[in-house]
Length: 508
Image (cartoon, rainbow, N blue to C red; front, side):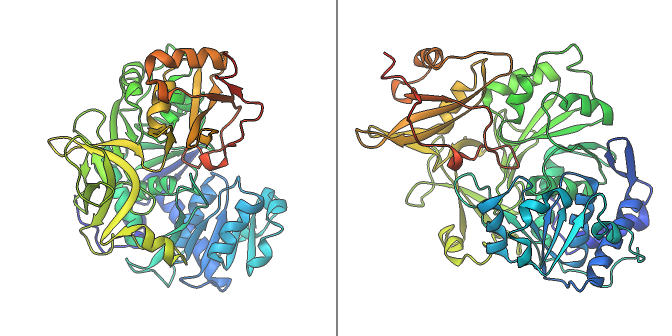
């Protein structure tokens, strides 16, 4: 791996604008922007924010849709060392209040349609800059007179963002990110993908999540072109790839199964995509996806608290998340913190080998920061196995288990099997209280479009395919799952009530 140098994202952007201003950086709908054009807009916004009295180190919340303006705002904050506080555009009520309570931003840049939901919290910031028709706030920043590089700039280890932890099991915590850590993950992306200048990445990820921002930074570092869409759409995904000449696609969570469950089309291989890269491809999806769409699969592993990728597998064995980047040591630990034998699952623990790339902590949450560490090691809460050659294989979340009649059951293992059913678009397993003590298994299922599925039929299908103790007792059909921006299901928001829910024991 190349070293993570002291050249900041700001300095790289300034150099790109000087050396290759005509390179196409972004395509959105029917328009293209060169790097020079984007950089000039970024400078205008950055200089406009400084003119409003903001200074390096001030926290600025962004609540914007997936649009070039959002990308420009992100890069503008990075240029002058303003600390980005991303806000999920779906938030409302308590979930929206949390980042304002926890991170105390000084300013807010928000889309005008969110004005009503923001009414209760925007009084907590000194200034709100609105974007949208009839609003002159963000428009005035884009039109600021000074398009030259701003006079202030961050250093490599200055804090530039508070990115949310995954939030699948509780309120997201603000992970402290420096300019250096924000660049290191995208360097892993470039290694994993083998992307070359001029390659085209489809940018479907929400920009209020670290995965989307990492794709943007990878494009700056690697001289790539971004093909940006407003949101992920399984039905339009390959049409977007064809439209923009996409060469690399990124996946997370349930993205690949959703694509695979779209109706087959004669043009499924009519595209320029060479590489599908990401994390979390179910083993049973791997070969069917490759055979149907004609792409090469490349997996890695990363986590919000460190960088986008800690391990990558550009050329290793199938299903593996690869080997650690040279920036990190990785060990697989048992409950006592000892290395587990080859082939046994252990918790992924990560230690930086490079100064500045360690876990920088959770903002204003010293207790959570301490609890996440075991000496020098960050404890991920994720499980993996290691083979004889040292390659790692993801094995689910340590805490995503249900204890049923004395047996610990991996929700990930159950979901993998049930996800193979042709009528199951998505599923999630949780534990619910049992009259026998421990827990019972409750399965949530979103049925695939055009399919029908009865709970009794699904349970009957499960019985020959898994141990009896893994077969769910309760089955609830659901129209849509609450999701994180990376398409992971927020299990903490799924009801544990079994009242009125189909019950295998009562249907016998």
